[in-house]
Image (tube, rainbow, N blue to C red; front, side, top):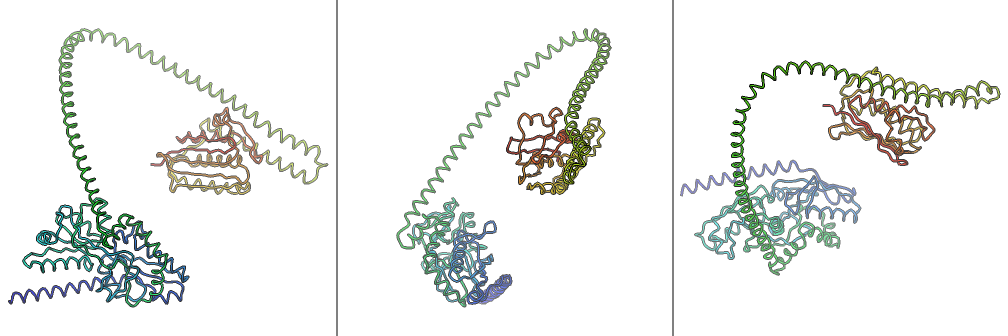
Length: 640
């Protein structure tokens, strides 16, 4: 008797400390609860407010995915807010606060004052109604007993009572599932007091029950019928025991007893909007067939659909298992056949190799004797051949040098002819213009008005600038051909140079009313000569400006692709004919042409661009269609 008293005392102390621990957990949880509006009246007065929703993950009722609240209850609450915004012209913000334990939500909502809502598919019970208010009953509450698929199917209660002690029941603290298990223990003890009770273990939350039951071969427990149907269709290793079904009033949201939301809640619950939204949301997350099963069982119309559905899934799983077994057998037989064939091939190869080795050794022995006789003669011949080869080598080298010099001279001569042709063509026109302007000023200056003199002076200035630019491009090209342009490659950030050239060109683009856009991938690192790349960018932007009509568009893009740095300068201007495009970067294709606003050009810019890009181990080309614009592309090394 004393031992019993001591045990009772120890048990009481343990319960006391457990209560203290739970209270401290609740208190800590409560401290983290964000503030909410004090009442519906306050929200109605201010026309705005905040409602805090305390929720526990329970698919498909409420859960979070990619920072978005989803599930039946999340969608219903969002629809409720739309309703009161329309009816009362108030803006209410929902603040979602996840609580890790189902029982904590019940406790916290009970203790709150103000606009707090609990969401976790709460069952409406008489006991909970004493300290909580339930609202928006959206679905019949049906709990069913499920078990691991390894547990036998029990067709009557007594058979299960006798075997119950062999199994472990999983549940969530404070849930109706826990109450159902405790009631089941009491029923077993009442039926036969000699039967040992089954063990109850607690999950972290209701969302873990399916996982625990599917992972333990001797596990069972209670779960909502919609949750069971959803996971069963996903082929979890679980099944339903068609005994001990529990049907309650329904699933709903909870609020503190002291709330004043009765009017808007009642108005929404009685509205056609609520009925329509509820049906659409339930079908979205449960599916029409599963929803039909829930209502059939709630109305007492039988469970034939569940039987058919589960049998179809079981038949499918059995068929898949048979197919997998047959596949494994075929794979095993195929592997054996392949292994035998490989061994046979290896044996043949070894026999062939041994035969070849024997024949080769015999022949080598004969050859060795003959080679010894030949080697002496060969040594004498080798000495003579080496001398001849040395002379031939010197002759070949001299011939190659002559051919290379000839080729270079021919190229230089061709370049010289083309170069002089360019000078003759591109210098004649502006010099003739200069002569014409100076002749006018020399002979008719006295007869001209100030405006006419000013106009001729401006034209003269433009022609001189064009001649100067042509001379500068010619000198630059000449220096590049003679190797006198400095080449200082280094690692640098291409973005900075592109932005600098875009800023320098922006005034000219604005003057011509051309929209200049750019899109740069961050931190484009390349290895090249920055001055060369500036020259190339400046020429490509000048060409795009020159051949784009007013109010046109020029777009610059730079990005990494295939371990290279790509730069594109694209316009929607006049485009380039095919016969010009194919020779655009060759000296024979150099020819100046006027832009859309009669801008002058030297014609050497693209030739220099090609020289500089090639010197930096890059490539440059053009994609263009006449009348639709051009896209100049050059590619550089990506910095290591």
